[in-house]
Length: 287
Length: 271
Image (cartoon, rainbow over all chains, first blue to last red):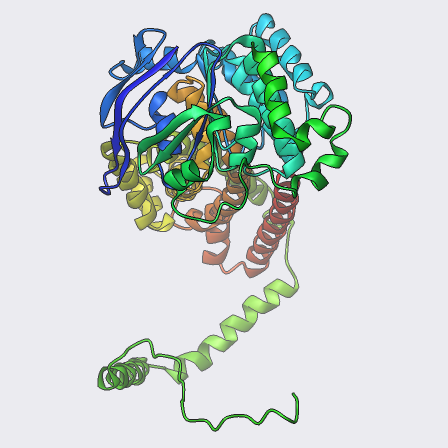
């Protein structure tokens, strides 16, 4: 369980990125964090594992206060928090396997990581994860030889190699085409359901978020302005989060989705035409 | 262009804004630069008599080149070459080993300010002194011979290698480093997993490039007493043995070209 208490972040430039955010995420719960650019989404998830130091407020993971930990203990907490990035953030010149095993860095001593002599159990688990994300035959390919969707799968495998208690996901689909974006989003949500992993997923794509995630948190100017089920998203809420705009349709499902979903194959198909159905299907998986 | 659309009369005009706004200052600076150039050229004294005398000596040098003599001092040449190559390889290796931690220390994105300043200071000292000057100093300190040359080239390598590598480290993709940091990796693991893979092509390229430079420099610093092929060359010139000197220069040129060709091949292969 993750709990944020009055989290605030002010950058040295004076910008207030987070302004007293309080949030509780239960085990197995996936939360989509939406909001305009600069609303503080990235700052928020980076304050959780302190890649960015929060200015005020506290963060608890399973009762342990992360804010205020010393460097050594912070590393021990970080290794249980998987992170997935917008631009994948793979080490481009390393192989797929090395990238996945880099998720174990917090667990193995320096010399083992330097010589690439990871414990056999770690290697076995890494093979298993690559199979799970469908990249079993790419083990020795260099990361920069993969396509965007494949890279993100490696990124997911790396995060899972950490054997995480929490996933922080920063715009996982922003660099992907619509079809791949859906596949990646579905994979992340399935894995969270399988492992009962809590997760925060930042997203610009409100429709995609609403399709796969039940709980939506809206952030605006560093404050939580909406926290509720995806079904409660409507024009009013979107205006509250993003500001006034002609949102067009009630309920988010617009016809332009139909074209890209046609080649989705058997399991996409008509479910994706009606996001509500897909949401229910995933709710079934998660529950 | 369609005939039916008459162009409007040009009522507005545009000029590229000049670098120096103030017209008087601009022409003042141009004038000062030209005046300095003329005055400086006027101070260069040319002794035509001396040049006429020297032409003869120069011609003998050229003649020596046209008939290089490899056999006369072959043993000295071989010894000098061996010394130079040893000096070059060892100095490059040692210099790079010392440079790596200094480069990391001199990268603003990895090191705290005190470490950064110390490492930058080392680099600045190494770069501000020309190889020949360092060689004179170390020859005075360690005596004639290749050891002084080895120390000189190692020292000079640090300034070159650490500075260029530090700049490359400062340009790494930070998101890769952030991702490794997020896994709970230690600082050393961050260096070996996120930084080194990104700068490895640069390390290899710079190493080969520096190997080239060090070999060329070994010929130069030999002239001031730091051993190697430069010392052999110096001796040959001092004895007016231009044919042997020519042989040595030709060998140096061939070796430098071979090294350059090989290293450009390897660099293309790694990147």
